[in-house]
Amino acid sequence: MGRKVYLDNAATTFVSGEVLQEMLPCFNAIYGNSNSLHSFGRDASAIVDRARDRIAHAINAEKSNEIYFTSGGTEADNWAIKGIAHAYKSKGKHIITSSIEHHAVLDACKQLESEGFEVTYLPVDKFGLVNLADVIHAIREDTILISIMAVNNEVGTIQNIKAIAKTAHDYNIIFHTDAVQAIGAFKIDVQDMEIDAMSMSAHKIYGPKGVGALYLKNGVMIENLLNGGNQERGKRGGTVNVPAVAGFGKAVEIACRDISINQQKLKAIRDYFIKSINEKIEYVQINGHPHQKIAGTVNMSFEMAEGESLLMLLDLDGIAVSTASACMSNALEPSHVLRAMGLSDELAQSAIRFSFGKNLSKSDIDYVVEMLAKNVSRLRSISALTKAGRK
Ligand SMILES: Cc1ncc(COP(=O)(O)O)c(C=O)c1O
Image (cartoon, rainbow, N blue to C red; front, side):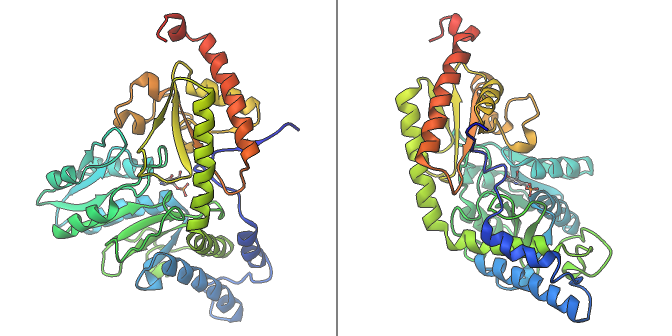
């Protein structure tokens, strides 16, 4: 088999050894239903409690019972947006979010619009940043919820969450953030940052797929997500996926413990990658904020080379990247994020997201840059834009 390099860690990561070790006993040795009253149940329940404590501690939640396990980030986002909106609808029916949110937030908002809620989708600047003045300007008497993502999944821009949350509270509005791409990238302290609700997911931080959580500050109202058993304080019924939850707890603990060492490594890899590209490939534009961004994600437009075609050629060379977020990568539309940042359709369609992981080496990067240079020049040689003498 030829060489393989995975640069799509923002789509998902492998499960780390430590996380897997935490999960394995929960598949057979400790198999009780965490809701059962006997010792088998209590053993399972202790594992779920430990995971909840670990996550609460990592984000500085005041109490562990503010963590509600879900099936992932999508479920946490949907629950937060719709559940909070429904719980506060007697107070007002206006929501503020940004135009670059993940579709789990955007489509939940669309559904609320069909139910009679009104949603303001804030613009972003050319770096993908929401402007605080725009947030303040959009606030109305009937605004009940503001939801702004902590880190954008396509370009890696970090939003000024603390300032926006504080503003929301000045106006007595609930603040939710999608922190799926932020956990492990920088310290999140939900109390200091005044976050009322926050979505998280395990599979972006070397945990298993299909598990995540919603942090919900005690006292914030939310409609129940699933009626059934009394799991998750009666708000989300259903037998808890104990192995997944155990793995998630461990993954969050490790990600938050190792922030500075991981970010240092990722930054070194990213800087080396960008430097090598600048040396070998012309007409490349980096999309996203020049410094207010996470180290693990780089989004680049290769002018006169179509992104999907580049992705497929790189795939033939064993290199995994993506054009937009994984869930939208089948859509032929240019990315809504890059469009909102003001990129032309042409530049948006020539964009590739590279997202780095823990175990990349410099030689992996050398290989990727070599293959990129080869494939970009191949695509440019057949591009109509090149022929038209644009460059
Ligand atoms: C910012 C953001 N929010 C939400 C999600 C959805 O998370 P999950 O895959 O756990 O449903 C993702 C993952 O693609 C994401 O990047």
